[in-house]
Image 1 (cartoon, one colour):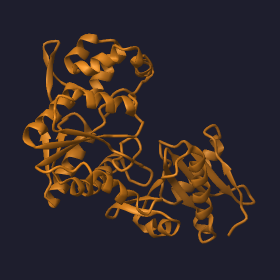
Image 2 (tube, one colour; image 1 turned 90 degrees about the vertical axis):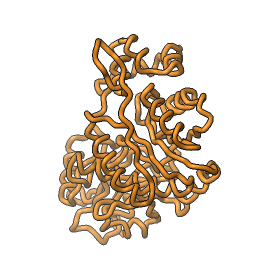
Image 3 (cartoon, helix red, strand yellow; image 1 turned 45 degrees about the vertical axis):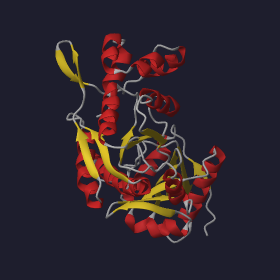
Length: 351
């Protein structure tokens, strides 16, 4: 075990972050865009020889200089980051790693949840975390046919409602998973409430929190994948692996997804799910987007367009795209902080 000490590297420390970038690049990694804590170990010459970071409840961007591997430095980095997470109240922690290093992190107390062959392994620090989650879902299993929808609902639109209604008309039960991670302009508590209120008239719909296992685009790592499309495809394949286990627990035989021809993310996602889910007997049903007439043209109803309308103050477009329950929320004092956040944001549309 080394005698080196660990130091935090702050976002304002440009020289320190340059050293992080160089070390990560040496190990075939690049610094992730989503980090909220970074640390490093320096040698006697103040050269960075190990680094690691956090984002939310995940550990990421972990690397040790090849000249110092075998000295226990990664163990020190992971232990330090775990302590940081404990101080934040994050006792359930996750990491993504390359296939080649999964066994190493297993020896440090992390357990595999799912993997994408030749690309990555998703791990957690609780031996029975995922199995406990699946067991909790089984209490919502119903007799009869079941379908599922995963949505961020940022916010819940008439497009989301149309997707749910389409599934509810074809299946005895529809399980709607609302992405729990708070990385959206609308907070999770608001998004889930809007989904529940917006679907309350459908008696065969069951709403769930996604928990930490259905991962959003914002928190899926990109630091050891080649390019943007590789990141999206890997995320989709990991999502498919995890969803198949969820489907088994709930007796789900179909997943409904919305079509969005102009979205790179949705296009790749839908293609991957259409490839992977049928292998396990799960239909992937792609539903054409609901449209509305705006300025004499057919316009796809989307949450991105809604956020743009909030930003620009286009109340007429909001009326065309939102159910009454979401409109009521936006007209309430409770929504003022969210609307101000959207107006101040320069990124309200997802690619």
